[in-house]
Image 1 (cartoon, helix red, strand yellow):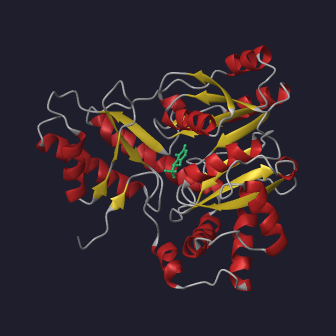
Image 2: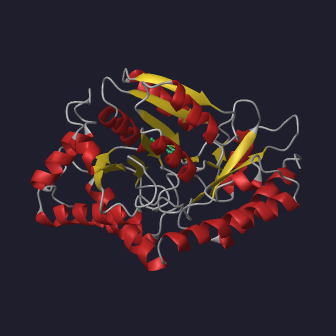
Length: 366
Ligand SMILES: *Cc1c(COP(=O)(O)O)cnc(C)c1O
């Protein structure tokens, strides 16, 4: 393969040359320069969420799930109880994490493609005084659905509970304003809307919550309170940091700021999504979600209703043309997903849409 593939997958995703080039230097983890790099990245991440006055940013080695597990295990005390609001695979994963970590758990479920119902959340909190924390997925990547974060945050705060948000696939693009939304912790990672490479998660947590969380974690490596205390004391990560990933994220954030920040990035993703939706719906392919629930992050389309349809055949044919798609993540219906995020623009998505239509016609499925 001479040309790189365009990854239409929401992490790992297509990164810019500048971001990849930033990984050409080796960094010593004890070096003052690397500590400064970590500090600048964390400061910028905190600022993106407008959390400087109240929150802190704690970086963590690993993929996004490591950060979710660390946040639940550190912020929900051993005697606490987590209510998970689940309308897709990532909500279910959060519930599973709480179960594996031995936290008391309650789950409110909605079908794929149905947003969290805020009144039901209020009722569940009213009915169970043991619930201390609520967990929700901002953009449910399994479908691409956007949950009503501001309303959820308001209801949870009104009930006097703490909210933990998996904002993995929304952070940096969709609105998360910690100065106006009462949120205990926001979890995200390097390799999604910030367009870095994968390998680093981070949790933006209320300082008061993290300072009261020492001793909660049953894991050493995933103890965010300890990671934060060590970082405060030494400027260093506790264990070997993903140095090249941090350097790439620094470069990616520089480009993010140059591009114009969150609003401009969101507008680019929206243009990407629109280009794909327009072209594919003209060809008769249907979006799984109602348009008003669709975040411009990842799109789920119904597979063509042909008896011979196989995702893997479709995937391989698309890969030959230079595009990497994502399988559907729904059990009840046959779907495929196309990511709109990464260092790509609407022209790339138009080309991808043409390739999708060509391939499906060639295979006799459209
Ligand atoms: C990507 C993602 C994660 C983390 O997945 P990893 O494979 O561990 O990086 C968690 N939640 C959501 C909503 C995601 O999109």
